[in-house]
Amino acid sequence: KIRWQQDPMIKALDDFNISSEGVRELRFLLYGPVGAGKSSIINTINTVFEGNHYINCLTASALTGDSFTTKVSAPVVKNFAFYDVMGLEEGVYKGVHPGDIINAVKGHIPDDYKFKYNAPIDKENTNYINKPTLNDQIHCLVSVIPADKITIINDGVIQKMKEIRAEASELGDGFMTRVDQVCIMTQRDITKIYQSRKIKEKMMECSNRLGVVMNCIFPVKNYSDDNNPNEKLNCLMLEALTQIVQDRLMSYHKTYHI
Ligand SMILES: Nc1nc2c(ncn2[C@@H]2O[C@H](COP(=O)(O)OP(=O)(O)OP(=O)(O)O)[C@@H](O)[C@H]2O)c(=O)[nH]1
Ligand SMILES: [Mg+2]
Image (cartoon, rainbow, N blue to C red; front, side, top):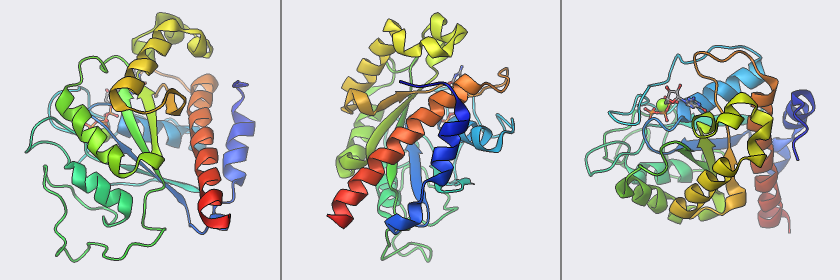
């Protein structure tokens, strides 16, 4: 289990030699409903690695309404790049088009591309990447689901998420955010998270609705306005990243070296 000490975990991720896998950096893409906490995860990761606390410059505040994030952006933490995209919404003309997430996963979408509301990238677009290399592709596709909203996220959105996963199921992991909103014990002491029945229940619900196996769902807590730097919070995020990275590494070894 987690030792709740961030330095060894940060060091292990820093030391991780991705170039031996034939990629410059391991690229993560976070997708999910509007307001799920995608941008917050990236803020949190930045905070963990930079040791700074610059939060909420890019986050929106509700599950309803338009996605706050409209452009792909990818702050890089040494070996890793984290792509943040617009949220998914129910309905045909709203939110990011699931086909565009798939395009991004396959490496067709250029950095800084501004998504159109539910219309996939035009192949005639001069920046469309026609023959993507392994470096253009996404290596870790992470669904982001808020623990306190999983029950009310509508089927249309879940359907779009499943559509995306179906194209890249071997890359599928999930982050369950806002764990502090469903369990008071966890809110008070984050190290109790794995003892919480409520959290386990919510993880099972995420697993069932998305069709992602339980051990690929990682509960995380993000920094939001009122949080001070917190080693335990950092550790939870580091644990999720470490597991995903190790997993990915293992599958690269299987695919390319054996
Ligand atoms: N309490 C709590 N709030 C969180 C957590 N993660 C995110 N939030 C809040 O949830 C809201 C939505 O977060 P965002 O990161 O903007 O969500 P998003 O997925 O980027 O949303 P769009 O870009 O609009 O699609 C913000 O008010 C965040 O501060 C968490 O772990 N705990
Ligand atoms: Mg966002």
